Image 1 (tube, rainbow, N blue to C red):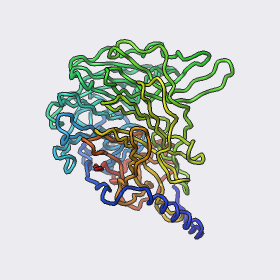
Image 2: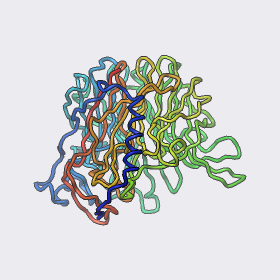
Image 3: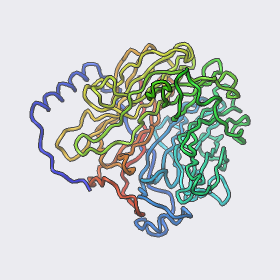
Image 4: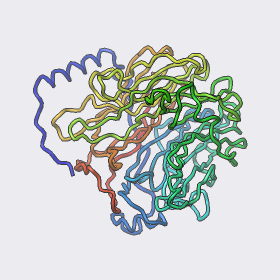
Amino acid sequence: MITSTFSVRTSMVSAIATLGLAVLAAWAAPQEARAQLVPISDLSPYPDGGDPNDPAAVTQCNGGPQGGVVYRNSETEPYIAVNPTDPENMIAAWHQDRWSTGGGQGLGAAYSFDGGASWTQVNIPFTRCSGGAPRSAGDFERASDPWISFSPDGTAHYMALVFNDSISANGMAAASSSDGGVTWSEPVPITISPARDPVLASLFHDKNSFTADPVDSDLIYATWTLFRLGSTTLLFSRSTDGGQRWTHARPVNNFEMSPPPNLVTFRQGAQIVVLPDGTLVNAFFRFGVNQRTGQGFLDQAIFRSTDQGRHWELRDTRVAELFTAVAFDPELGVPVRDAGELPDIAVNRTTGDLYIAWQDTRFNSGLVGVVVARSTDGGDTWSAPVPVNRVAGVKAFLPSVSVNAEGTVGVLFYDFRNDVLGDPVLSTDIHLARFDPDLTLQDEVPVTPESFDLRQSVITGSRGYFPGDYVGLDTAGNDFVAAVTVTNPLGLPVDFPQDNSGLAVDANNRQDIVFARVTP
């Protein structure tokens, strides 16, 4: 348990903070551009066994022994997608009742038909607690990594990582909706790995993403990483019938090849976008080693396919070197489980220009910040990264990138610019930086009308506060729309380091998913 009494910093610190905000105000967006938050998520819809504070009762629905803290009523890691046939129709997804040890009791979903002004929640049975039937694709204890993509005919597709905490069975599943998210098909398996013996228990599918082809409504692409026996493989599967059936998951060709003498040993965070000519661009971060010098390297990179995923390039293309870091509480030292090394990629569907955003320290005096890079030639070459966050000495993290109808590039991120050292809260805000297509900064818009206290977050073991490995950003015409995680002002103490050796339930409504719309 962390508790402390903090002294008030000197007036010099306050003066520096005031000056920094004044500089920011000189180029920030006008007040009328500020987004307004609309609730998306609500309290838990899952069974509680008659006692929402009893761990044994709350976890009866899992159907297997659990470990860790289940944060009932708390949501995290949102995603959002806009219907290309009706920009007033949007669907959001998230972790519902997040576990400190991974995943949620289920995955939430909600739809809007009024441009995000109101939301209606629906249930999709990706897990037993959300109604998954025995021997179905939802016959699992937990789920994670929600991802939604719309086909050009307006059909929505939802991908989920499903797994058991008590045994090593896990895999990927998908569901579809043809009515804007009101009703959903039963989940179907993309790939499922059955329970293995202890020697093979490391077999695990992770960090998935989903992309519906923007031209052909029958085609959907899925990609993720498979961990097994100390190695990793980047996998790919596709559906050619609108998500009813999926091809056998297979490795991207020649996974470990890169320009000699480098050997790539790890890739994760894969995410596909489709260029106007149909080329698939799969972005991820990679780790490798120079076999001559023994020196390791960490990069953002891409693979491409010119035949809708049947074949992939023999070698990946380096985007930029990665200087990785995560955010942390400046006073308590608690880390933030944020995007870390994970990239986010977007494409201008008119010009084919590509944009990748990620966390990086190169422009922020060694502290975590956010950068974005551009390619104008389909990913062959990339611009040098440019800084997104412009308040010096303030940690910025959890970026998402999207491109609107006019080609404006929006990068969403969290930061601590309004935090006051010595007060009892970790004041956190969300912002949207807008760039022209050449990545010249136009302005910055505050997404949160007031700060929220990140210390009220759910905790994920040693990795700390957890707003999500990603948050959602999309566009509706020239507007940017977002589904983000914010905490509620409960005033609870921070329990860190966290004890996950047993089973516990935290029924506080610590954090919610909310919607924001930023107009030009």
